[in-house]
Image (cartoon, rainbow, N blue to C red):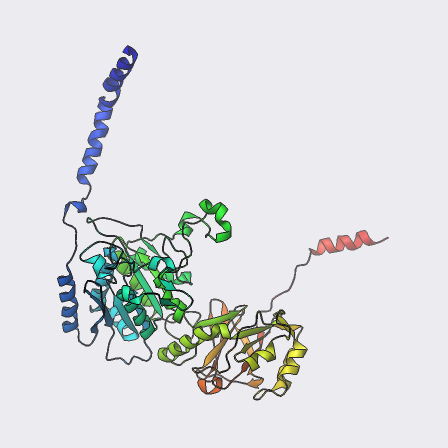
Length: 543
């Protein structure tokens, strides 16, 4: 006991109460005094009356840009609003459509506030904002769960059901993509109807914090939900553009599993789950636009609204430009089906036509069969697309378990098919070393053509190829944005896109695209040992 008292006394005299300890205590006091304390001021919130009056004020002040509509009423009679922003003096046909929602607002208030700040920017005289409204139609639903935002602070609506995660699929018939009890979630049902009406190219869902106090933060991020790693853009270039725009204004972003240096989870890896990223794969309502219309999904977490706005500006700028892998301005959402890096894509000479085609082809893509001449060979590419059962019978083996049809059999099958120059296709195939058409598994085709046209896109791995011959169904075709081919350089590839208009796809069973090209940049094939090694082996081989 005495030793304990002596030890404590020594600690107090020579440690905690020493001049050095008192100096360190004074240092932290000084630092705490200088530290900003935003939480000392009243939390920055607003009432429903202020929200409603602001939307009506903007509508009155910007009649040629701002349209407000009520899309539903919550269980406790709050309106769910849709704001439609675009320059109405510019025709709508070639505008991209972007839907921006606060599916988690409800309680994540800074998500809503980010959207409201974005509206202020879009209504400003900023040059990029004006350009965006000329090129795009921005649809915004800032508060998807007004019950959770105004009277309470809850994830559930008036019926206690969550709008954001939909109970991870339990509220859905996922096979038919319908809500089981839509009357219990009128807010979510309104969201689905907006998606169905506008079929947007992009859906950005904006998250944040409840703002219990000013300064409350969340780890800011772009491109994924922490709990659901499937809810993300398929193209990291979209996330990169948004992250760069935020950094430019002083707001960095976390990259989830990339920054944590973790592989993604899968069910077979459950025994090692603790070594993998925490996100899992669930069905959330935010995936509905992708499942129905191949809409690009984006999700952001925002602690500071200004950072959220900066990232959304980065997103919207993409819609004002031409991507490297497309021949037209807008968001890259046109590829509907793929085989070995070649694609069936949406058809159209403007955004409205491509949107119709995209919606049809995305719904039909599981009914289409694609094939590629195999093994693929330099300076030659041939792909096929079977649309109807008759078309699939031409390109598929008789044995449904096989995935390759011998090219001689394919040439025989094409004989007599209306609209085909089978002799030219046979000559093309016989001139190369390939053995078969690889088609993958057979699809369940529908006995009807494609109503809104389609495009077939192949990629050539040379920057400046000479296009010696381009044919569709054995017939030569020429450059055209509506009925012929386009080519452009992007990402190191030369993209060759063949546009097939509706009048040719409505009664079609099958399309075969072939291309012959040359290059001014010859490449070698295979590795050879050093000449000295070859010479030495020859010498050693002599008797």
